[in-house]
Length: 111
Length: 113
Image (cartoon, rainbow over all chains, first blue to last red; front, side, top):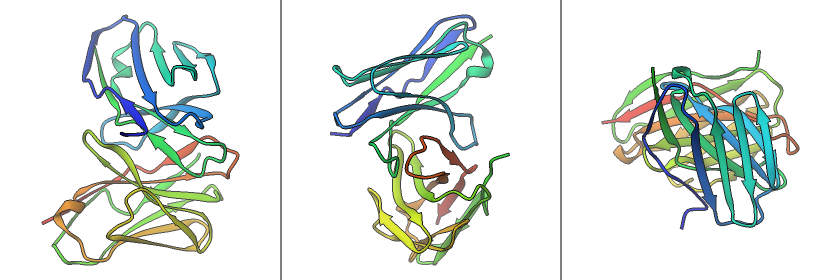
């Protein structure tokens, strides 16, 4: 069983839709939870991170962590064509010397 | 601006060749990583280094080795390239053990024929 599972998509939505991206994980020791965005032919870049359970909001993006269910989500409100990318969830233990990535969900926002 | 630079965007090598992938960061980061990215498998850690001359195996180190002689440079070596090592290779760095963010290079797409 993979430590981090992520639905690969692709996910296609109309502009303005609310997007929900999700990951599940098996290691209850994970403490830090991150979302990376990767545009085509580029390296991933950090979008948001959260520590432990709860919500974190940044503009149109909300990251949610439910440690009891081992489930994390990224919500995108008022999605834009520029949000079209692959979104990777990532997790780490207390020391960040190793990041565990999901396989990525490809999102396409249609104008 | 933060920068992780990989020496090549695209490489084509023959089976059995020794291949060097170079990565340089200009942020004085302690940690450096090499990942490979394959469709459906996501990013898999090959090796990482938390200090000069220090290295640790990741999840898939077989067929690879690394070198970190200077803090800013982390090299990935394919000792004898094989077709199953055709992949996108991503280098990343992070400040230290208390910092969440890993900064990635643009990737090297390696094809072994």
